[in-house]
Length: 167
View 1 (cartoon, rainbow, N blue to C red):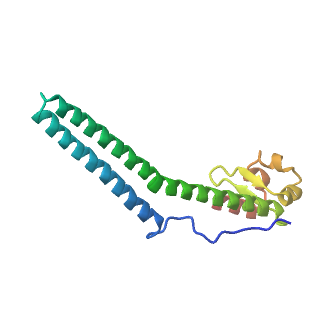
View 2: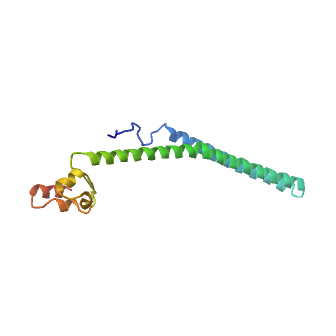
View 3: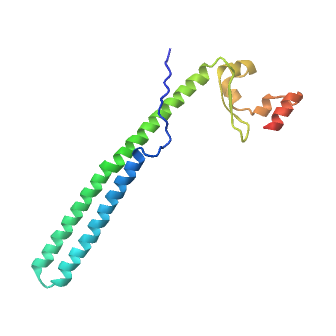
């Protein structure tokens, strides 16, 4: 028999947990990129505008530009590791947890000795039924999915009419 697992972890973001750290890291990384762009523009303008006729100064400006571009790419790489990797890990963990919970729900729904119907509240269509509901209604599970709740409840009974009016 398969054992059911119910993780104790709440999947809703909670204040003070990794989301705050991720946000802080993201802001730091973006600030570094902005600072690098501003500094590189100032240095390049100083080198090029002041000494445009000097070939050595132009070459130095090009090397400075390449240097700042490489540093910017390194900062972007660090951002990928420090910000996006933990976020991706958290998304993967939440996805696996939700998949496990869905499998557990499917198992419990199918193994329940009580007749269960999952109904879409907008259209009253039967979305899912377990084996006990199919047995009681004398239909197979696939045939039940083609019906609505209104099809199964006869309106000749007052209790059924009142129930349908409340829906």
